[in-house]
Length: 316
Ligand SMILES: N[C@@H](CCC[C@H](N)C(=O)O)C(=O)O
Image (cartoon, rainbow, N blue to C red; front, side):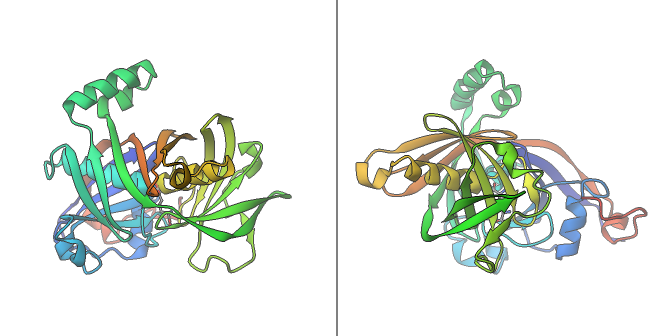
């Protein structure tokens, strides 16, 4: 019998992840195993897995090892591989700090989308953020402080798509944040329906590798709210790359382009699980700031891992 497998559970604005520390990349993680781990009834439950591997030990990250010691090997809840996860990279950095593998401040994380620079608030900043967060009534945020990630540039495509739910249709903007997004502006977030199934879009086949679909409604000046149907995970309570795509799409819709004005533009993006702050800079780089929390740690029973557990079902 193999040894119990250590894991942690964390979330960023309630986009939740099972963290699997595996510095030497010794774990075999087939899609079916990831899906079982993310199962909310028969497994631990999560929107995805953060497989924590030393960059030097992973074939997809070896070339980044000089710049970033750790690689976020991200898997969606259905076991599919994704290029990037914005909430995930904040939680990943929080884990590295929690495990004593890095200290607060600036660090780099390798992802399939390239190296991402992360800033983990230090104690003094924590205190400042904590005060701010306490005033905003968010005790968990107050305890954990914010994490900022330089998310790279948004790539906007000229081709639009049409997204439909329950007899309503909206034009959507195609934006890549390293992973694909379609952003639709709606009058009421309830119009997105239950989002159990992926919304229809056309032209068919425009996303051969799948897409994350965001629905956005206005809340005030430079303040929007969104819901998301994530590729490989259905509706989640937050999506960091999605919030960046939404902020950039909202800015363009509002006639704001930092590259033209030379002035950064910041949007507040409300998600079901909290709030993210997104700033687009004149050079096109997008920063995302939000909380990241470690909630538990434990060990996975090797018998369950080997598939011997009774009652394993399709319980997502
Ligand atoms: N929740 C993530 C995005 C995770 C990957 C996504 N489902 C995809 O397949 O592209 C985020 O916070 O960005």
